[in-house]
Amino acid sequence: MTDPASANEAAHGLLPFIYDIIAKALPFDCMQMTFMQQALLGLILLAPMAAAMGVQVVNFRMAFFTDAISHSTFTGVALGLIFAIDPHWSMPAFGVLVGLGIIASQRRSTLSSDTIIGVFFSAVVAFGLAVVSRDRGMARDLQSFLYGDILTISEFDIKAMMVLFLVLAAFQAYGYNRLLYIGLHPILAETHRVRVAVYQYLYATLLALVVVFSVWAVGVLLVTAMLIVPAAAARNFSRSAGGMLWWALLVSVTSAVIGLVLSAQEWARTATGATVILVAFVWFVFSAVVASIRGERVR
Amino acid sequence: MTLNSNTEATAVKFDNVTVRMGGNTILDGVSARIPAGSSTAIVGPNGAGKTTMLLSLLGQVPFEGSIEIENTPEGKKPCIGYVPQRLSFDRGMPVTVLEFMVMGWQRMPLWFGIRKSHREKALAHLRSVKIEGVAERKLGALSGGEMQRVLLALALGQEPDLLVLDEPAAGVDFQGEYIFCELLEDLRRKNGFTQLMVSHDLATVTHHATHVICLNRKVAAEGKPREVLTHDTLAAIFGLHMGLVDSRVLPKCDGSCKAHCCNGEHKYD
Image (cartoon, rainbow over all chains, first blue to last red; front, side, top):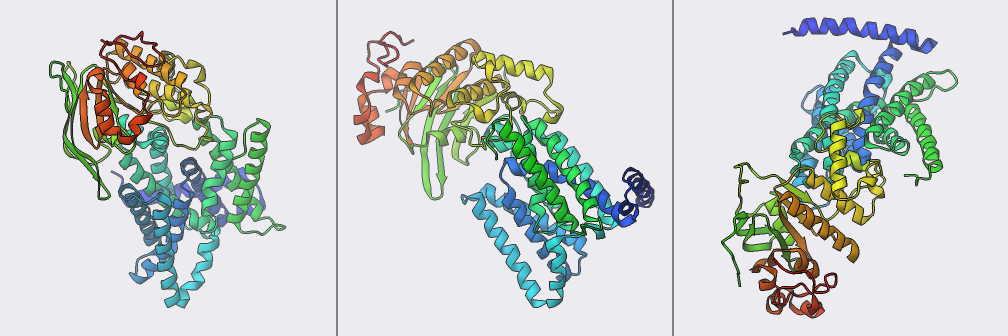
């Protein structure tokens, strides 16, 4: 078994190697700076995760769910400060808790999904605002949650994203077909021996973690876009459920790289998260044109 | 009135099954049996608990009482195939019929394509319901009748010992329903599964069912269609609405079906 110290050393050796590759592959001035290389690596890890989870978010109309999770992050930080826990732990922990709470309530309640999510959404936002109103100092941190800041991403965040990336890739490889099936008809899926509840809870946990990391990158205001815009474009391009994932990955990763490079240009100097989403939106417009040429209704 | 024949083997036995939801009693002490190899139909008015009875069999709603599902003659736990009333999904979703057919069998994610063996199996089942031409079409582009056949093909893909159908012909025109039921009967005879179907349509029931359960929260009657589907029983479960039932679709004791599609030619077993 590898001990934590040697694993840490290996990661330390791996990251400079990746940064070196990034610097050589993208020979722009801006990409020669370490914080830009870190930001790009963060986005390259995050974009495919958001794209893959976004496919299910779009197909099963879960955008409101992701909104509720993203808005819970500020409450996560507030709780971290109250109980003296590092926000890097309290944010994802609280996000996962809210996600699991929503799924558990949906499975037990006769209320509609939207109503349940709305209740959780309001509660977490209200709690966050209550804490902020008590401690004015926290209001300063609010801006970074609203707009995100991928350029200040730390090596710890990147390592955490690498672990999440591997877990999520394994989950999607194993469960992509089953998640689709559950989304189409959960009872039908269950008669095919798909363990619906297990998949729903696992999916909610991973989605909550992806949303929390996305909040660091693009902020609360744009986190839903990070998940749904590439998947929505992919829906227009693709003719099959299998193809949709590849299109979503293409749109998401290219938007991330182009968006980061554009935002760092002297003439642009725009917020990275917002620029990434704008590039993804250009992809979406192009996909809508392609869909209309093919004679399909633009969705 | 309960007309029970105990001479046939039983595939499923409902014993005093009660389902309560939100303070309402949906099923109240339902006891019924589904003979092995039969085509059993559950009939009753809206809100009678027909779908709930199926869902309790599928383990989807909590219930009191017991439901015993007999093992197959080979001693195995029976495989249950399910055909839902409809799929309520986003029709713009890019899922092809073939992808839908294999997503319950194939471990390899669909983004790596469909395995040849799974593709052939899916096509064979689509062929068995005479609809292989829709394999590459998007699921959302299917008509109601095509969708029902695809759902039937999907259920057949599980090689079920017990096939459960929830109003499979709802939303399909008379001709489509007739063709669907004929197809179902052929498949049942060929594959030898037990069939349990919820139906609103008495003509379909009298034509195709070999066993009927008349339900209105409780079992009003159970047995062979010609013994159970009498004016008295139907009046008891449908109440005032019985006036709307065309008496020509009810079976007579002369052993022939009077449904429009039969013109009195279909003989009971």
